[in-house]
View (cartoon, rainbow, N blue to C red):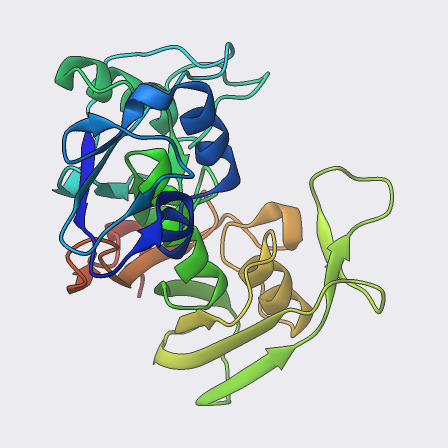
Length: 287
């Protein structure tokens, strides 16, 4: 895939690409493979000075997946795709990245197969990763440059997500903010907890509906700590239904009741604001 620009002023190619968000890793590859950069259809070194009106093209280099990831034909729940990004509506029970316990059948395995069928030399770039049992919308960058641009937006808080969570107990507050630091629990490589020496974590919630022993809430994150929603809701006495790791019960649902229901971001190339919605899963619908 080639990226193309028309220069608006006299500028060193490297400086221009830096202004476009090109990462150090990509710069390194472009130095090692100089034929990937052309100015007016002629190979040009990164220190060459381009003039206003010149046509600059960069061919994205081939990417290699990690040795632990194999392409595997899977039915990916794609709701949007173009040459730069993918949006998936993930089902619960599906892991995103292979692990020692689950080396196959993951979203990453399916993405590699999807790219292979399209003849795309890309690896997996997940922007909004979800836990295995969390369902809903995920954002994926298809190539390294798109990932760099979207990761910068994500760091600035410009990729917005909201979640639906079914929590235990009747929540009396109509809305609120949980501002409590989160860190790894002593002696565990998985579990997190609220602790004074943890990282800043801020969660906003709004009550959507009340049931006999549960409450449906909309949750938004100001930070993105591991298990943040699960830890924060448990810490205020309302663990997610089905979330046995953090004190939830499995009497109404057999997985953590968390669903990524809305995703909003500015497309890194078209600059269009894109918004996606995913309906609340059927296993959330209780009496």
